[in-house]
Length: 143
Image (cartoon, rainbow, N blue to C red; front, side, top):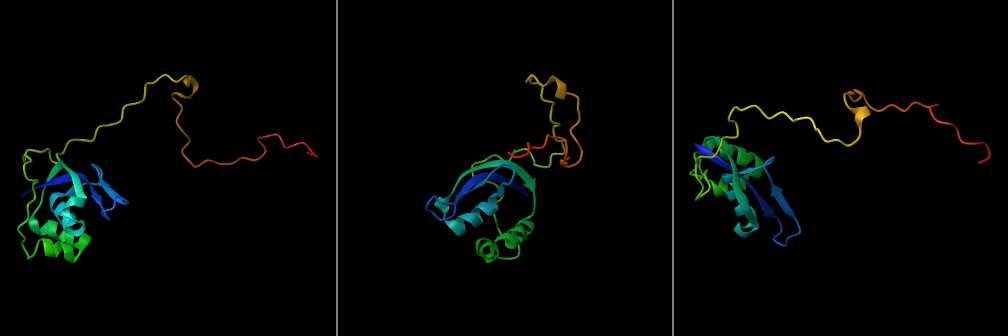
C-alpha cells in the first residue's frame, strides 16, 4: 500500500513553549501523525503537508510506530493487522516516491567572483589544522 510522508509541526505542551518541526529531512508518516494527534491532541499537530510517498504494509508501519511510541501506537491501531489510513484525506495518491531511483543531484561549483583568485584551484588541506610554533615573532622582553 502507498503511504504519505508529511511535514508539519507538533506543539508538545499546548502552550507554544516547545514546538517540534518535522521537515523534508525528517518527515513523519501519516499514521505517525495520527499517533501524535492521540498523544498531544489534534489541535496541537498542525501544518501537515505531504512531501513523499512510499510503499509499505500496515503491519510494518505499526511495528515501526510500536518501537517509537510504545503502547500509544497499539491503542491507536489495535490488532495484528490494523486498519490504518496511510494516505492523507483529500490528497491525491500520485505523489513522487521517495525512492524513485533517480540519482541525487551533484552540487555545482560556486562561480561567484569574490576576488579570491589565488584560492581557486587549490585543494583544501586533507588533515586537521596543525599549530606550528616559531612562525611568529616572540613578544619583546620586559613588555
